[in-house]
Length: 325
Image 1 (cartoon, rainbow, N blue to C red):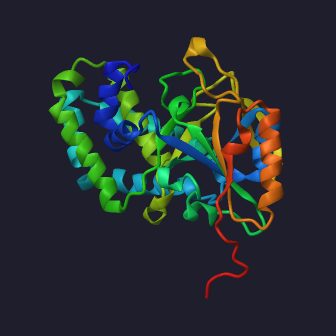
Image 2 (image 1 turned 45 degrees about the horizontal axis):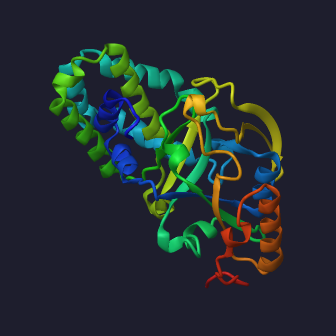
């Protein structure tokens, strides 16, 4: 975060403490990984673009509703919100209601027009096998791959894309409330700083705090995923870099937003082009690993990815013929 405005960093540390700490934990040597199908990897490489999917068309079509419902239950309980509301009122009267009003105004749009690219944190001990919990998310017969990428493009401070990364939280109801109590404590501890911030900026921070709490929350049982979401919304954050496109995916007609993998150094957007984007490709469980690996190596070589053969490995996880039981 060295390149970020110190005031922005401080606001994030106050209003999104867990997200801020997760960002601090990401180092230059860290890696993200995008789990997808081998078929989709070929589309990404051929088109040199990635697709942002509508949250209603993801594996769990009610995925975003979990966070919205948690936030609804919390914000409608005066006892739960009391400490946060009191802290905000002490800094800037009316800012809580203004931020909450903006959230409710945009909520129908957040439900229907949230588009995301999902990645996960990659541990070094997963560099050969990937993560079993994520391989199990693929439908039977689909060939999964884990595309390991540098974290740098995700951590840069830029509005070039109008798409913003955030870690997914896996909070219980109590952890959800605890997070906002931490926010209240940090607001009071930084009151002198916040008194220098405009009401507009504080309202926006309250709105963004609520927005990401709603759209980047999942059930606590899914914590092994360690997902990050790059979130965009064509109405809330219009962008000239995304291309609206209608596609049929797994038999479902839907709108996606295509992002060409093109650097823009003047906008501090770098590292998203081939060949530097892909660090490693791990092939998931399959009985056809040999020909799949040969084809991926050939395709990466075609795209000028250096030393492609050393970048593509098989997870070695055996294919189960039947389920457990």
